[in-house]
Length: 449
Image (tube, rainbow, N blue to C red):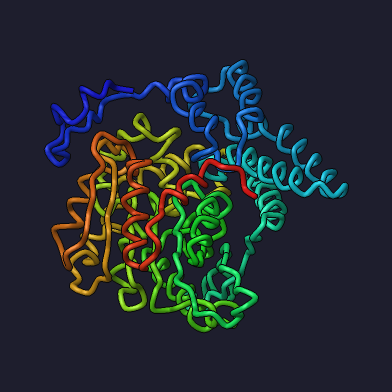
């Protein structure tokens, strides 16, 4: 990566005054070996994004195998995914045997480790047949492990009651992870609890953002992890800017009305937290559903410049581990998994996204940011973000209702880990929690129990 002393200087595009070096090519794009050694090995050893629930002992041999094969961009995604299946399948088999033998701890650990291996196999998005299989198997492993933790995480299927009629949204369900603090035996009718709705990102789905759920449970806060349109199993139409509004209407109505949630959740204390691309939707929902929310957090989310054609022309060489522009085009519905090996169709879809994505999805151009109606909103990002330009954070502050903000100095996309402290402190203050947010942070890299 470029030396830190070179960051924030000599802008080569006046729209980005913080001075992003848009013509750089970061070394992890040269080969998988560089990706592993310069970007992935360290977080893998710590069990943090994107290796939640994972173990370095599983991934190191896989990485060595991929390096020996000499894989590099542009990846054959089936070939890439195939390198992970052997390890994941062995972990799943070990977990099943352990569970049969009554060793719940080992079974839980191995199921979740298997889910992590399948996750990186389908990363950043399930665009090939084998990657789609990895996503399916990863879910199976995750939920097998999640039901064995002390406080099981359950999948709920939320009826998409606001679905667009005569579309594939109709009669669909929105899968989500729900975790509600248990009622005490001494007070089974205790007060309803607050809810944090976690909006997932471009590549982090409900099976891994679940890592946040136990920490909130310990604070007496329920969590619902929901995938954004165009990712995971969201039924929302990827290419329709209004599909997100319909999805969140269905989710929020379910929270308020369903028998499984309404009696135990305080609908006056709902906070949304969107991660990365999910931050784009958190900023949108703060305006479109302001009357349903106590607050909304956009972490690392863009709103307008993230769709600049010139920005998208450069990002495949910058901070993101793989082909960001292509992955975004897939997420926003400009080409589908069915495109498969039809490279020309994919390339045409990516170019179309670059040319029209901003006019279609910008929260500035569609008037969202100019609305006066907005719930309390916190926007946070890292100063050196080269996935979504931090200028989008500044842009969000220039329009509509005043918002709260923090730019984390000399940090990359999302400003981790300092940004987590900023956000958790804000949530604790808004909900009147105990202020011990460091307890939650310590759980992120720990084994699930």
